[in-house]
Length: 295
Image 1 (cartoon, helix red, strand yellow):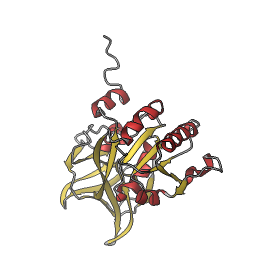
Image 2 (cartoon, one colour):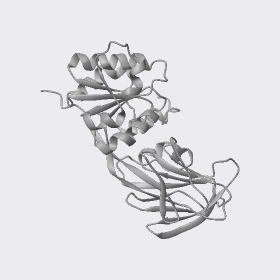
Image 3 (cartoon, one colour):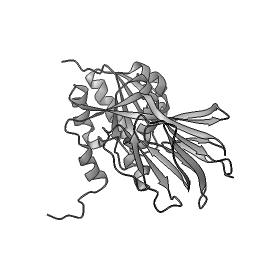
Image 4 (cartoon, rainbow, N blue to C red):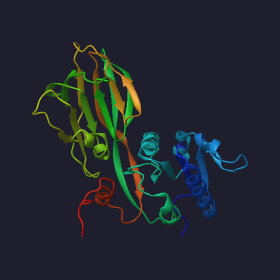
């Protein structure tokens, strides 16, 4: 049976010293199988000059590839996913980072696990993303998207911002805090977890809002419907210009009096995993659940 994936896009970040070996092994395997390969342009410098691969920017890869393989850590996949999701190309992650909740294939599994996936033996899951925009004087002045989380914070240590939170235009609370984390289930094992938020199964259609060091002992994370419109009004009396950060990578600067509107993105990301993939097994491995138990 021919592979369902004829054209493969290969993306990633080449900062890791071992990245070149993983990339070379990947390309050699894809060549041997007869796939058409498009390599992300930023990886050109790490390859010999005489290679015959096509090179393209990631947005172009998204429009041409049947599958995108991202080599790197979760940060690499987050960065690529925000572009690839709008093209509805499935994504497979090879872990060259640390935790690897999203990039769950280790390099030593590469030559065994990936051919099986390319032959159609895989499990897929759909993850939603968030759109965030900053509104000033009733106009959108900046926008970005996130797979993990959108964070509105003071941008400086030991200073709080005062904001009001609205969900579907219903007033929730006014709060003084270091900021607010708005996280998808995908991001619930990232920054949100560090802030005391719950771990949410990726299949949930929900968003968690986690206050950052709130000036109220009773303030706790809230889980709301994934289709909610979330609005954070930064009160005019604030003196600082709080940054709005998407996935810890994209920064927008807001001003006192601005509103930050966050809602579900219309495009979803399809992640592929080896057969038998388990979110709970990932949690046991990455978060060291049961590590203290001895048989």
